[in-house]
Picture 1 (spheres, rainbow, N blue to C red):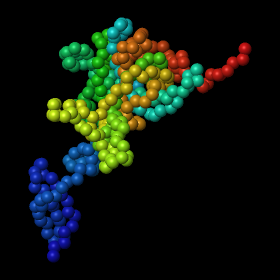
Picture 2 (cartoon, one colour; picture 1 turned 90 degrees about the vertical axis):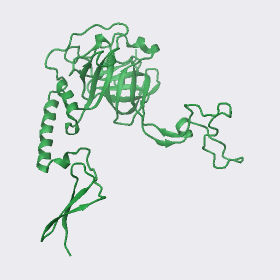
Picture 3 (cartoon, rainbow, N blue to C red; picture 1 turned 180 degrees about the vertical axis):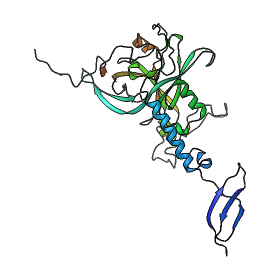
Length: 345
């Protein structure tokens, strides 16, 4: 009986026949085996083409490039930014890519308690300017990236975009529509001071996935009675459509299905506080997404709130060119804990 040792499976050129190379103490033979399933343990195919020495070299070289780009701090621009223009009625600024940290309470001077969400702007930069012809033919746009990521799993096209902008690779890349007077040069850093207390913003993120849910959890249906002849219909939706005249179920009918894991936007959220040291925005209420998720923050589109966004930092806040701001910026109605709450005449 032949003893088989050191058995390995090789996938050759995408073929469906898998060869099993086996080695014996006395002789070496090649046996064809079918039905073997290869298990992918990583998100890259490099492990199948590179040796361990080549993998370590690639990780080291890419890590050095990543640290070199990160060492340029927050301002990778090699020269002056593009000419700045004045804000006018109807101007549309670029937005930010932020990380959801969590929720905390704040109090107003009137004693009211509000719950706010902390959004931190981490390594947010402008990546590319898209003209009207390149975007949709109607308006210009800016590609913005946030939160540095490892370059090891980025494609060549993605790395070319980051190299042209002179910034490290980003975990999230998104697009914001801007007006012609609000364009920014690629490589421009974006800070939390882009927004000021008292302004209103719209926050877009992917909601938490709940899986397949019924109508009571998905849409808040009341359900059916627990007794009085009800049998196994307590949480069912009931009738699903009209009778014989339409003879169909109308589109958009609320039925059981997948809940969450879709992009949602919270409109008209007030900015109560801005921390310029750690680039943290304190936004009113809750926002979509789980903790540590990446989301988009932009000026609100609500008509009733547009008047609050007059004369913002336009086209954005430049840390090196604009005036130095204090560490914390508060709304005029926020109670500041460091200040005395009671004074004697």
